[in-house]
Amino acid sequence: MSKRIEAKKNKTGALILVMSTFLAAPSRAADDASLLKDLSAVIALLGLPCGQVVKATRLKDNDHLATCKDKSRYRVFMNSEGRVVAQRQ
Image (tube, rainbow, N blue to C red):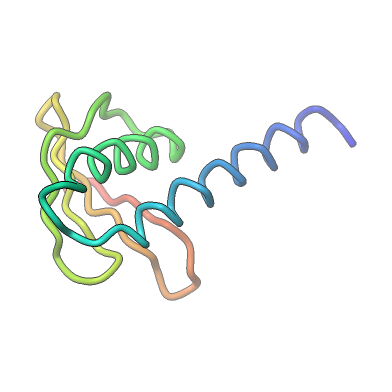
């Protein structure tokens, strides 16, 4: 297996792990720090500029509005194909 394919599989595996945590976490104050870290990781794994998520607003199940330290905002959600998507707002 080539290193490029292996790296892509590792990145995909990491994204799945982070997203399973992100989607399984209930929206409670105690979990806020964990959710912010998870959203930061998801946005970074998708290759988008953010740095650190400092605020997250739950829009509905598996759908959050993330505000980054640099003031950029992303809607992070699962699309109809089951893929995690981050759209700049």
